[in-house]
Each structure stands twice: as structure tokens, then as C-alpha cells.
Image (cartoon, rainbow, N blue to C red; front, side):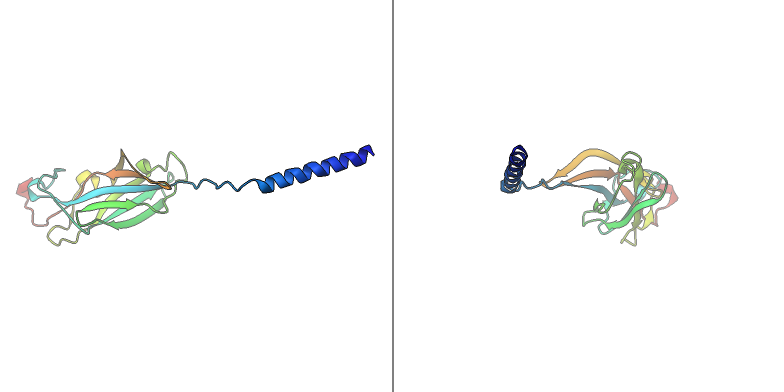
Length: 174
């Protein structure tokens, strides 16, 4: 009888535990917040008066300019590459969709990514300038800018201003 009592008690406990788990309301899992890496920059046509310098005095924004963002992994392989277009004010807002870090420190955007001017729609201002190392790739910096939403966060990294220059600048202007 003791064995039978034990098995009945075990069965009763299992039934109570099972019904408790079934009766517990489904608690929605908290959706993970999507964190996006974004690069921003301005693209200008540098004034001939400042050709050969990094000065942006007298520079004019270039709408629809093409700018590339390249990221390399810590072992030197290109892990992200995309060309973006500036808006009507020469402003670049480039969400790096699909960007992934293999190593959380060495593949961080501040170490791994750089920005280059690629193409200017202005025939009168289409030569690359090395403002902020644009020819080899302007490094990123973090300026404590973030956008927050309920399920979204964008961490924004800035490249300094990038520039093209007019082809008709004479050497006497610098």
C-alpha cells in the first residue's frame, strides 16, 4: 500500500505541476533591441582659395555625392563595403546594415571603418581632395550621438568633412 500511495502522490504532484505550467499565462519575451551602426559626414566642394589645405571656409555642400564606407576585420579582410549618396544638403547618413564584428574590440567601427569620397555630380568640382585624409579614408570618431526608439538604437559615428575640389584651381591659390 505504501508503494501505491507513493505512486499516486507522485502522479498527483505531476498533474498539479503540469496544470500549473499550463495555467501560467504566456509572458511575452522582451524583444531584443536592434542596435545599428551609422556613419555621418558632410561632403563639400572646397574653395580654390583654400586648395591644398584642410580649410572648409567658403566650401559649398555637394548634393548627391557618392561616398564609400569600408570596414576591415582585425585580420585585414574587407568585412563591409557600400557606397552611399549624400542628401540635398551634402549630408551623409549611412546605416551600416549587415555590419558585424567578429572581435568586439579589434573590429569596432572606430578601428575598422573609414570613409572616402568617391564621386561628385558637379563637373566643376570633381577632383578628390585629401581633407581629413579622404583620399586614403577618413577615420571615424564617436561624438556621443545616438538615436533611441523602443526597439531600435542607432550609434552614430562621424567622419570629418570630406571634399572635392575644382579642377581649375591654379597653384597660386594655396
